[in-house]
Image: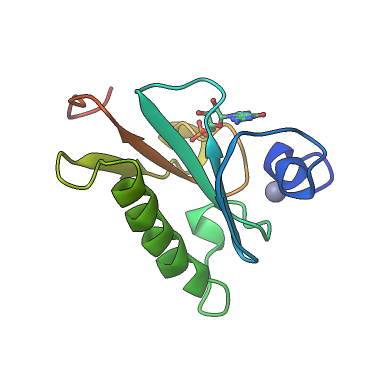
Length: 114
Ligand code: 5GP
Ligand code: ZN
């Protein structure tokens, strides 16, 4: 976890534009936004990706989705809609190996993705 950029953001060693924070999760603006709203939501504890979820550590995922819901409401996305994405591994396009959820919105998003 020493070289994990998202762990560094959690510790405040790398700055971020925080959108929401509590003792378990952090949400911040993506540094390279793909949509007018592009927020990254992460657990503060390091979990690499979906493959590393277990019965013991997966409770955080429902907490993250409740956080997504609250942020979407706050940013006025709830009615018009939005997308929540988690990329897993090489073929999934995961570039940061700390599980995270992209909240994308503010424009009509294309489907399917490339
Ligand atoms: P992935 O491709 O792993 O699903 O998504 C990683 C996301 O993290 C990318 O959208 C990328 O722009 C974002 N990201 C990478 N490094 C940083 C950073 O240092 N700060 C912020 N705010 N976002 C980052
Ligand atoms: Zn990490």
